[in-house]
Image 1 (cartoon, each protein chain N blue to C red):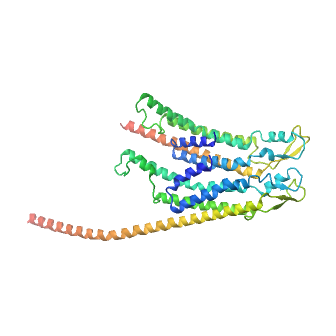
Image 2 (tube, each protein chain N blue to C red):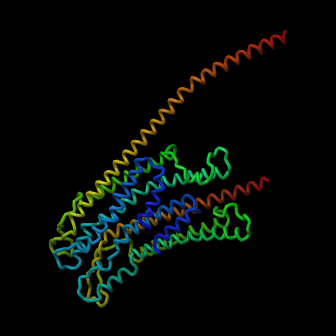
Image 3 (cartoon, rainbow over the protein chains, first blue to last red):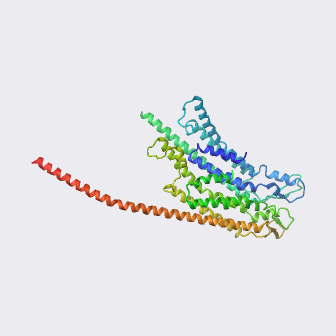
Length: 219
Length: 262
């Protein structure tokens, strides 16, 4: 079980997406998943070992690290990637349900089970709203947990068992900050793509509905 | 998800590339990505652990390392490779869009469609002309821009391409000036120069491919212009014939009218 599973999942979703949806999948693959696996993971690999406090008191480093990093950036990033890709499963399930229904009734119930119309359109719109919502939730979480998107070089810690105030130094803060900004930028790009896809679909189908009603009135 | 997946994605684009494009892709995968994964990552693997400063002051090593390596070489190369591979996706998307259109035509039973089945459409190789030419050329242009930007960023950040053995650091909390020693500086310099050399080769290949595409475009245009110049001669001959026919008809009409009136 690894990121390859997510990659296969997203490739499956690609079949039923609009053009903007396919661009979203490409952005998630290339700029988020690949950057995470190829570059970002290694930066945070030894973050605990390299976290150094100016003290010999046993336990102080552990306690300070735990206080300043309740959930590591890299784990939040991984969670974000998984959560943001999951709503697309709703669309896959719905299409599978449609195909199952056709098989069960042994007749063609839908012109094309993979085409985005009717119930599948609602499912697709819901998945887009969920994706956008989750992206925003994680960005806010990052902001709140780490007081903005900065990573300081030095943090001052005075939790027991550290005697008085102790200087603790974070490893590779500049590199971590650069990748954090990269994460935020790609998240914002994905939010923009999701919102444009949402507006495009709503616009397209309201025009379709309006034209149908117009034709019916004329008849 | 790893470099293997990128290989699968870009392998699909390979079919529709020019020969120079295929060479570029091979150079990218063998001399850059493979070298990065198999060798360079090991060389830089212990970069912070073996970065040693001549002081016992806790935190000094961390701060000095962060000061001299804002972003590690290996991460910069990984980002460079990702950005440089991305424009090829534009071509992949355009080809997929064309295939989709052809499949739609085929399904509608269009008699203009010359394919026997959907499999043939899937296997078909598209020629680089029309809108695909523009997409392909822009992707090469973006590739060039990204390569150049990253090479400049490298040069700017590390003040050249050499890895020094010793760095003098006086960032707080280091007391006074402290000597810090980089691990494996010669091996890192060798790999840095190798990666820069291969980047330059890729830039040259991209420039050559761009020139080739432009030359092909202008040749095709001049051929079309040459063809359209020959056609007006035929049109003139036909026009004169039609004019003669019209005169004959009008003469005979006039004669008939005169005949009736009298």
